[in-house]
Length: 285
Ligand code: C2E
Ligand code: MG
Ligand code: MG
Ligand code: MG
Image (cartoon, rainbow, N blue to C red; front, side, top):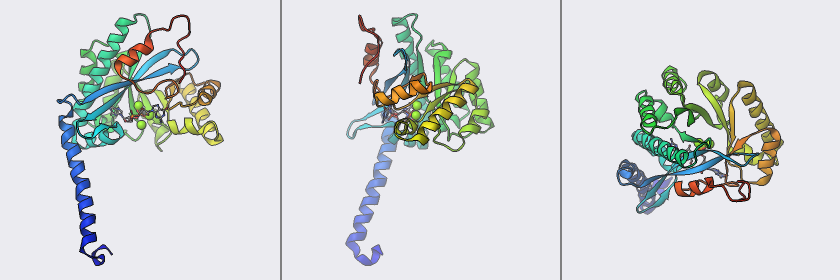
């Protein structure tokens, strides 16, 4: 028992714990101000047509550059933002940024079909007012709502409020895709209750697919479900040429991953859209 091991040790534990909780408090309060201090930015990861090598959409991924701690990933700070409610403002801002960026790409590359994917967290879905809020952000930018895909995760609550929430956005023309598909137990129920039009196959299945027959079967099954329910499929986390080829073979038409491109700044993303003279647009790693 810690107490019997002497006072010093107990203090060490205490300092540790209090440092950790101070850290958490700091991050929480810093996050409240991150937006107004311009510490957030949006990066874009292209989503490709796997066969033609054309970019069909970009996924907007938020980044936080903390002045002292450096870059903090969304996997770390989004949960804090959900806890404090800052996610509402951050989510609205990301949506507006991403839609404005899409409009600017569409103006620069007219006639090129291009969409934008924006992540929406469970905490946003849980608040009824956020639907109207996001819709306003979409409309204000002048983007065609049909070019906007909202990515929701499976563990988001599916209750009647959420269904209403989604219906209002869906009515505007915007689409919903289920992110990280297959990682949660309620996936299939979700498909019935939510106006879902797309699935994103979770990276874990894509990475296990080449060596593991179970993962490959799951990918095949997801593609079959998608086909029969008329859903669009995006494979996430493609890191090797082998994975890309196998996905094409299995009939998966679109995907994203480090093999083709990491998430990049808006300017770098623009450069990816400029056709390379005399060659196809396909990129290598
Ligand atoms: P996600 O929506 O599933 O996004 C995919 C994540 O996988 C991204 O991490 C992306 O950088 C990473 N990724 C893409 N291709 C590869 C690959 O080939 N290999 C590997 N290992 N990773 C790859 P990121 O940007 O750190 O985002 C993590 C999560 O944070 C996202 O997962 C999403 O759930 C959340 N998130 C990011 N931006 C936002 C946002 O604006 N709003 C909300 N609510 N959540 C966000
Ligand atoms: Mg996503
Ligand atoms: Mg995902
Ligand atoms: Mg994820």
